[in-house]
Image (cartoon, rainbow, N blue to C red):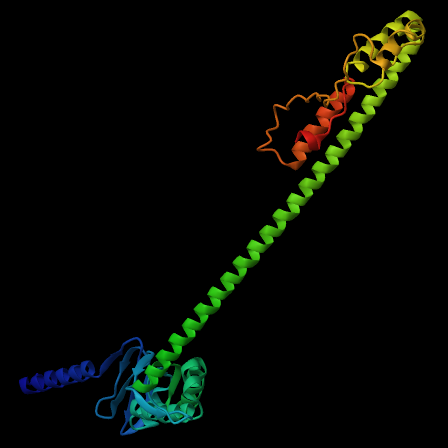
Length: 355
């Protein structure tokens, strides 16, 4: 073989190999390449291995398909009530059509920024300052809808828009601070008044319940005292009736009755009575002597003791202290003592005189 032809063949092979290696392209994930053939759009390469035709095809643009966060500088806008504020917005967008993104607009990001500023001015111009500060969600939704519709011919999908910061003038900030402080003071005053009202109502309810319980306790005590008194009187009269029945059943003789009568006269004639009661048989025996002497003052006449007869005191209830027990307790103690005196056959007992 001719050496010159061999050298020429090797050169041709090296050139072909170089062209092949130079035109092999690998598109990374999340990107797309826009390919032109002789200056005209041909196709879009997705992620993977591709071979470009030398001298005829070229990569016109490398487009990122990832969602991009576009932080635009603050924009001065005027509200409906003529207040100038600065709004810093953030736009989240992604490219859904690399061809439209390449050929739809000259500078897509700059166009999106200007479109965002003009749309934001239109939206804020319809709202007052207070509505602007409290309606961020509505502003975000309206701005995202307008931008998404306007950027469809550019191959851009606006997924979300957020107002990063709203900066009113310093004078407005001072007024808002004073208003906020006054509102907080008003809330504090209202809360203190409500707390005081609840405390007063609770205290009144407590006093009411205490009085109701005290009245119920006093009522129950009076009922129990009345029931006890009625039961004690019933038992006393029942005992007296049973005693009389037993006396009738015993058939006591007349001498015994006379002896009991003398014992009773002993208690009656204690020197304090102005009249003397005598049995009929003794009165007949000494009527001419004793009664005449007493009436005429002859002989050893005994003077009548006219001083008040001492009353027997009831035994003190060890469970009741006059300094500690209430009115119901004292009345119960007096009633018990009176019943004891009545049962034992003693004189009557007056609680008010012994109190």
